[in-house]
Structure formats: C-alpha cells, structure tokens
Length: 435
Figure 1 (cartoon, helix red, strand yellow):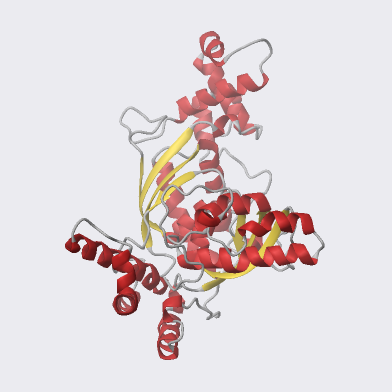
Figure 2 (cartoon, one colour; figure 1 turned 30 degrees about the vertical axis):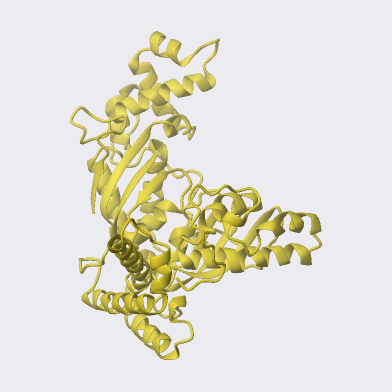
C-alpha cells in the first residue's frame, strides 16, 4: 500500500511530502476562537490580534478537551495506491469524507500479494464466459445503445460495454482484499480518530475477520504517521511545552466516547441487525447482499450501514442474473466461488443492516442507484426488494399517508421518479434486467 498526500491539497509542508500539523492546529485555534472567544470578533481579527503560539495552544486544547469541530475543518487529502478493497469499505462506511475509487468494472484483475493465482484463473474463466453470454444473447442491444459515428466505432463501443459488464460480474470471484486505488479527502480530526478506532481493533480483534484486518490497519496507521498526519502526544509536547502533555508516541486524540468503526455490527450494542425490520419516517432494514454490493451501498453517507463479520464456514454466494435459467452454469459458478471461499470473495453474501431517514433513502440512494446504468445487484436490491418491502411494511402498520408518499418511487427507476431530472437519460429503463 502506498499513501501520499495530494500535492494540491492544503496544509502541506514546503516539500509537499508531509502534513503541516502545526498550521492545521493554528487554523483550529482560529476556528475555536470564533466559537467561544468573548467579544465581537471575526476570523480576520483573531489572526491579526493573536500570536501563532496562542492559536496553537488553543488548537491543541480543543483536542485535549474533545471539542474537535475546530480541527475537523483542516482537511487531509490522501492518494492511496494498492489499498485492499475491504479497507476502502471500512473508510467509505464512515460519514466524514469525500472519495473517488477505481472500479473493478474498469480494471482487469492480476495476481498480487493480495490475490491468489486461483482467483485470477477463475476471474479470467468467468470473464470469458460472461463476454460470450453477453455477445451471444444481447449483442444487438449493445449495438443499439452504443451507436457511434461509424459502424466500426459502434462495434468498438459495444464490445467495450460488454467487457465492462463482464468484468463487473467476474469480479465476484475475487477477494474483498483485492487492491485498488482511492483518493480520500477527510477532516484532520476525523482521520486521526479513525486511526484510533483501527488501533482498538489491532489491540483487541473480536473475531477471525477482524484478525485478518489487523496487518492492514497497522500499515495504514504507520504510513500516516510517516506523513505526519497522525497527531501524537509527542507532537503536542514539542509544539506547546506549556501544556505539559506527556512526551510519548501515543495518539493525542483519545477515544473517550468509546466509538468503534461503524461497519462492524458486533461493535454496536444498539444494532438492529438481529432485530425485525422497522418502517416509518426512519427505517431499519436487514438484507443479504454481496460484499461488492455493500461497497456500493455504503458510499451513501446519509444512510448507516453495518455488517456481521463473515466467516469461512459460511458458504452462501451471490449468483449473477446473467446465469438465470442455466442450472449447469449456476452449479459451476457455485462450485468455483466456494473453492475460493477462504479468500473471502466479493460475491460472498453478507448480512447487512441499513438504517436512517426514509427521505434520505429515496433522495440519496434511489436517485443515484436506481438506474439502468448502475451496478445491477445494488439497483435490483433497492428497486425491487428494499423499497417495495418498506412500502408494504408502512401499509401493514397503518401508516397510510407515509406509504402514499413513498408509492410513486416503488418499483421504478430514478428516471421515472416524479421529482428527479436525469442529466443523461439512457432511453432504455429496464426494471427487470440481467446485466
């Protein structure tokens, strides 16, 4: 895993290879003064009237007192190459960040320290099978919907679209530890807190799956320390000796509130993952989806997602819809994916809980994922199962008025929503599709 700071990001040292914690804490000191300093003041006045040392002292004090919103305003912008997909999922399940991630629908899988030769072999086998299925059964569709200025360009576009869909399905064979590339912008305070939460798992993993994550968490934390992103007690001791902070390598941010990484249901004593679904203005909904589908869902930060840690004893897997009706191919698929179960393939089914405001589910999940161009498994779960079941649940509880508000979105793609204007209509919305 290689982590660097975005050279165009803020709060960089002069060589742009390290994070300038001193300036970030001075900025936090300004923000804190806006929050609670007496008098009629502005940020400009604070900078003019107070020394850097005073601002630095105040910035560090906000960390020591757990008043961390001032240090949430300076941003850390990371560029991460070779990051395991599951670590992306851990980061993307949190709510304070912006990220762009390289999709496996555009990436051929290759053998690496994360991916075994067997996974690559099965990936390539099924990539070819899916290309053949799509070319044989749906080629006219791809020609029609990928028209170019010439027949040659149309064919090239159609073949490219087929390959993308084939890669999207073949990647179910590959471990959720597959390496990818992530650009990740996050508040200074938040990335420090996340490392504290990761370190809690390093010190006390609760299950086999968390044990597998320990070396990746250790590596992630160490590389951020190397970039001066992690704020330690030693840093505070050097930057502001008058505060009498211990001169140790311990995190300056503390987990006083006993918060845990949000993706792990076992670490949430209030989790609804083993309870009945709940329907109302807010909802709690349990579903079995693949790791690949969860990775799509939990990018929607207005909804909370968590999962039960998978085990190698469980052998339930997602079957791509392209194989529907072909019992021989389905059997072959299940035999193959079960043979790499010890690597935690992306097609492994996870038990997942989603909860949050119903309006956010429609506005920020439906209006992004209920689309013919979206990843099929997630679109299908949301459009054809999740929203219809919530609608029926509202009716069963006598919440007729709320159900009527939801009804126009049920069993519809986003371009059919009454309050969504699609900027790039595909012209072929399909509620039921195999790719």
